[in-house]
Length: 149
Picture 1: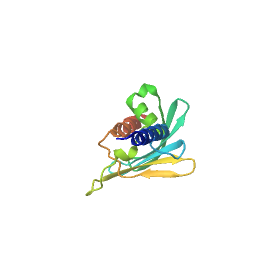
Picture 2: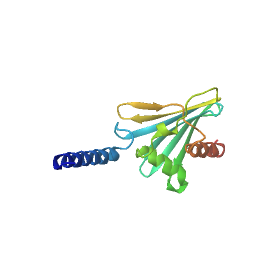
Picture 3: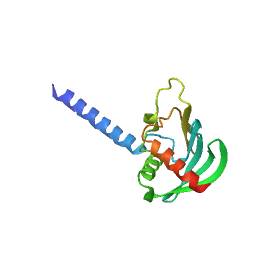
Picture 4: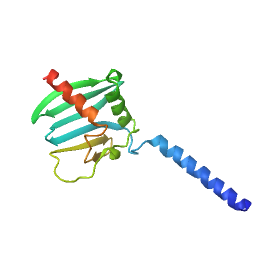
């Protein structure tokens, strides 16, 4: 390999590393800050809620539970451990929700989508896998509901 080829390869590697560092700072979604997250499970596990960030807390507004409209609010803080860090990673774009989907196949009886609301657009991710890591968020809400009603 001659010197010119080595120099060209070195420049390409530097450019790739710089691009990776730039994109890494952007997170998984490049649409600005996430304003809110809307969770919608229909069918057997009926649940609809919206999460917004409020300083160091997250506010969860449950609007539908077990096929009934409701208006209940849940606060989520660091004291809630893994659930808080999961939500925080989503809002800070450190979690790619497209990796939490499953290929639709057959009737499951329950369907979940998550909509990320940005300032200028909404991004809906369908076919969320409730048997994966996001299950802790669903269970956190459903465990809180009987106590709040």
